[in-house]
Length: 344
Ligand SMILES: [Zn+2]
Image (cartoon, protein in one colour):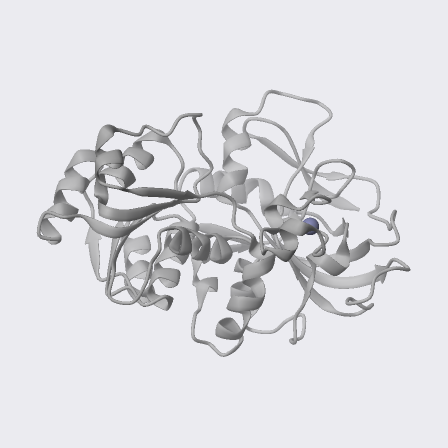
């Protein structure tokens, strides 16, 4: 079969790889019908050391179960399924607490003999705990929005929960990528009264407004902090969704937050330390977040997608086939595309 393999920074290729197949009785073999390129795929795209063994890429996909292992109960051949960006058993102590990202038997795609999602098929371990069967056909018009449940919409929702968005609150979203835009959707969905988006790209701003952003802050760094304070009687935002991960974004997020407020971090941190200050201590600021337990949130968000209350699939502004994936990486890296969907 064919799949996306990264060999080093800027070096992504579509290669022939061994066919995906069942290994464990708890596996499902999923033929991929839709996949996506993630902002987090751009970190290795910019930094990976050259490695001729390569790394299989992709962790956001929807597909059709082509075969299931003998112990699989909830997925049957022919089901249309969405996969969260990590697999998990659904039964361990952490899964039962809704924290599937800490699953004792979980893991990630593209590692340890598990296929990546940007390819023709994937062996999905722990299929019962991982996959969610979708009540739609494989070419349903909702596919782009359903695909965001595997990562970006779930991650935006996680940021909003970690930032304690609630009715009447003011939220600020740092980051105008797909996760930040989904964070706007999530903040609105949870009842935020005002939603600031920090961004300056006209196409992203237009989408953010459509999703519910009430004010756009196009300044950066200290000036952005000042602007948000001006807009909030000098106090800052109750809830700050940090959707980037680098130090400047983290510092901005911590600067924007109001005393007693919360910062929800979902951008993959590029440094080990939170650039925290005495101010966040004396202001009783909560700093929370991490990888989203997408498996838990898929079930929560799915009705809103199916009934059209949220439309996160709008973040896909480019569609390609598998051969176009290397170009898709280039486009996202150059910020010429917000997010790329791959169809098979
Ligand atoms: Zn588990």
